[in-house]
Length: 362
Image (tube, rainbow, N blue to C red; front, side):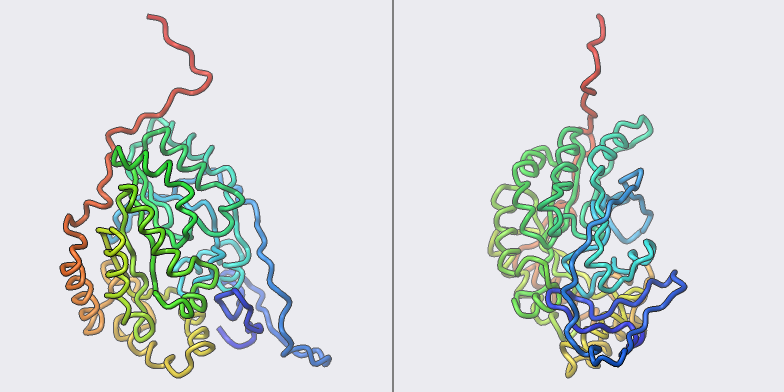
């Protein structure tokens, strides 16, 4: 990525540029037209919501280093604007930029609940937990209006289908009524991502996500209703938020959370130049040091996509982070039943009768 895609920094946005996607032929280039406007503040970038006309809603994967084989993403793109989001490159498949487009052009799957119900009714369907929040956040700001996530959960509850959720949003509390009912039958588990407890850093790094305080409140609300709840200290960024690892786990444990996880920063494809650009804009004195440690954990590269290595990294820094995490978990009695949080019951799956179904004659 070069400076020709740069735009004046936008309040409330994570990315500082909007380079065209890697599959596009055209390239954007900023220039001064002689009116002296090149350095003026850019007009406020409004979010556009576009209809996603996908005909199916369940995405399948065979990655050996993640604990699920199917997921649903109600939205493509994410208005939270987290600069480190590993899902940014997926916007290039749509002809958009992984930069500002990713956080301002949101595709909405309004038909997701109906599509899900149809897929779950197929005779060939075999029940395994569905993961939500694995790519973009299902409780991002658009959900307040569209309520797609609420509709999806209603379908899963009616079909008695297990679900796992990861989010940064306090909006998940709206659906505690559904999730607590499902949890009684071991059909639901949730995790809240807490990247930092520093409000200022969170606002810079995740500009439209819930504040750290609200996320801790949400952890307490979920755990207090006996919904299996974990905290994800993710991603850990060397020399930026990694010193907070133990503090994040301590805060989560103090409100009743009993599960925890972490990942190292991942910078696939366009995320690396976007993140480096962001570092130079907001933390210029730390930028070189941060990236040197990132590369140390990924074999000298910005990112190593190898399964088994991409989430945790390798080398001395990655090993130290692992030891710190495991030591803190032992001290705080987190993950005592390792893997139990996400081990849900698939045997209760039962599609409800269709409204038009008639009772069979004896």
